[in-house]
Amino acid sequence: MKQTALNFLYKYGALLVILFVLLYFSYAVPYFFTYDNLTDILRSISIVAIVAIGVTFSLIVDGFDLSVGSTVSLTTVLTASLMVWYEQPLAIVIFAALLAGAMIGLLNAFLIVKVGIPDLLATLSMLYVIGGVQKTYTQGYSVYNKMPLPDGTTAPGVLSPSFLWLGQGKLFGVPVPVLILILLVVGVHLLLKYTRFGRMLHMIGSNQEAARLSGIPIYSMRTWAYVFSGLFAALGGILFAARVGSGQMDAGAPLLMESVAAVFVGYSVLGAGKPNVIGTFFGAVLIGILLNGLTMLNLPYYAFDIVKGLVLILALAVTYLHVRRKKRT
Image 1 (cartoon, rainbow, N blue to C red):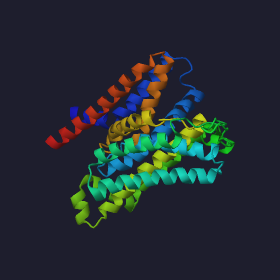
Image 2: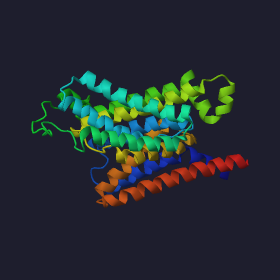
Image 3: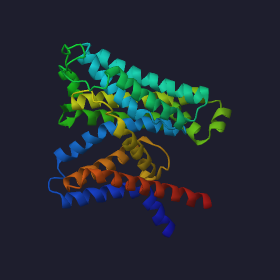
Image 4: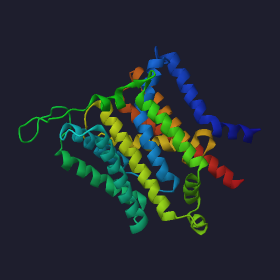
């Protein structure tokens, strides 16, 4: 009986916590449990969750990508500058940003897979390199409509309404970033769970040597994992620029730890015990609900990191205690 209860709590504990937090804030805070506020929560977590999906890909193959925050920052200013400085059409802007994210993923994969640098060290180094490239490219300035340029002139372009719609618009009453997030969660879940590609990624993460002996192309599959990580970070950068209406310096810095927290909280969702996109989504939802509710309770913003850290510690403790118990049995 005790074991059954523990297994139930392990499998559904994270969802019960989300439900409890929702009920508590609904009781304690007026207007918390309203359609507008709930969609605002989903809008606020959409970019973090999209970046976290990319981190999930790297963790599935037993890696880790610390460069996603800098990738978001770079693609945010790149996207804005292509429109504001060079008046490029939307299709070219989005393509260039996604290409930049893919190239960063390829470079990470080269350092990790070919050169053999440990993933944490390689992506940490890239974090600094990409951050330096971003600051050099913009000369340390944020990019916004009609901004003054170093030569004394004014930037000729503006962020187009169609671009801003991606981050600020609604479709059928639902924020566009939320719709994009839902489509990505469903698509990536199907890819990882029901395709040969997804099964190979999971096999590499579970036992790389066994995967190699089974004929799985380990190097190319791990490369794809880091390319996907870069692509999702770039998409996060595009949506961030569209949401705030400018290219902010170091915009992605806080997104790194929030996305990592969402992924690891997701380990305990439905008893997965491993990186999975559904868990990542619910991990981001839990963090978003907490931050929104605490803001409504007027908790000082500088205490939010304490809450996020405690939630992450609790989720990891539950996950790894369960794993240790299973090994003993």
